[in-house]
Length: 77
Image 1 (cartoon, rainbow, N blue to C red):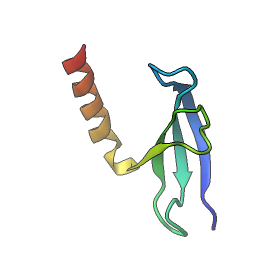
Image 2: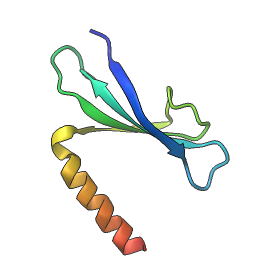
Image 3: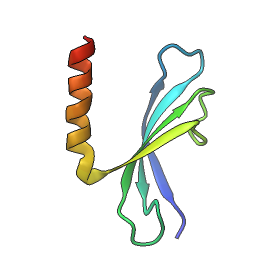
Image 4: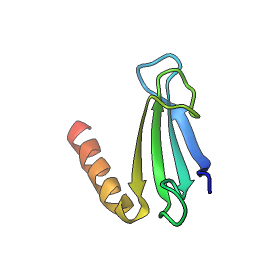
């Protein structure tokens, strides 16, 4: 089965003219029966279909990721 994805949100990448960050749901990202993941893609040219960098986060790790992002925000802000 082919990878099925749904873009959940796309927003501007700060510090760039056309860059974007996209957050997507990927169904069966590693083949049939693989668990879905959240994909975070960064595109310097604004093309969310072919990001320059991407990270796949298992849904089971989302709470830990959110906690880490909150810590990063507190340290910066």
